[in-house]
Length: 362
Ligand code: SF4
Ligand code: SF4
Image: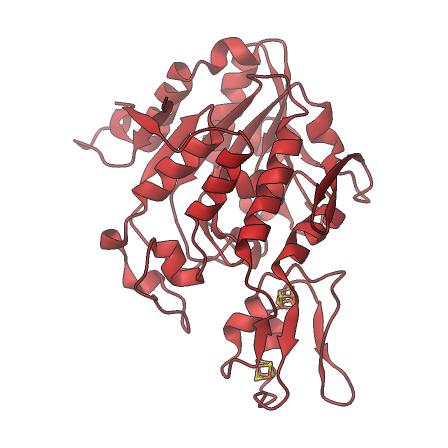
């Protein structure tokens, strides 16, 4: 059986405001079935608020529209993300006065407000569900779609598995990837790896050896990617474990909601090679596509990936030093990880189906 995915396309037939994405987003919300669902509920709108001088996260106009829609239909809501404090969401227009609702730290100011759930997958043991996510009646998983160094693809699943939990849980999932290995013989001590780390996790010690503080390291692989000699590698490339960890985490978070109380909206604009957590925006990889929505996380991820076609590649969007491998999906070609593996993992834990039908919002 297939799931329904609403699609408001960026493409337009004539120069008319009513043909543009904000107007189509209004119509998508009207057709989404959310109207009845939000009434009387306290709703967490989970976003990735970006970082640094990035400007490719979801534009405030769409967030404000969603917030207004919820309020007009009898719901209460707030925007939330993990580790907001250092990311300065106000720099991207994410403030209560602009968006119409509070912007709140999901795990509290000290990353200590969470509900611990036990899981048992290899070294992965704890899903610390963010307190504000757990306490909400409903969640709208509002995701900006882009590439991601660890997952290959960052969309609805990544927004939950890496964003609705504590730092401890993120580390446990990342630890499924394996650690970094530094080869002293290949290192030319150019030090390009040091500023590439957004987490202040790497350094050279006084003897010139590369050191990683795994408490801070997210295994994002930024240092690995900028290294001109390939001196830094991962010691295990078992991304199946990592993707299964992401799926288990996502399911554990979603299980805290009553059935029917999670909805997914993927924004496919400014689709960059790298995640919004890099704190900068690089040119888009493909032309803007539009906005998708569904109550099936697997279906919406599949539809989003299918819409990102290699034949639409804008080559200026490929960051310097990265090249296409020539094999598989555009994100696989860039990051070496098959993004569909994540969907198989989500499907295997019972979260939805890769079969979908698209309903075009006109
Ligand atoms: S993998 Fe990422 S977080 Fe870890 S040391 Fe390298 S750049 Fe820093
Ligand atoms: S980027 Fe690579 S070559 Fe340069 S210092 Fe770091 S590990 Fe060594």
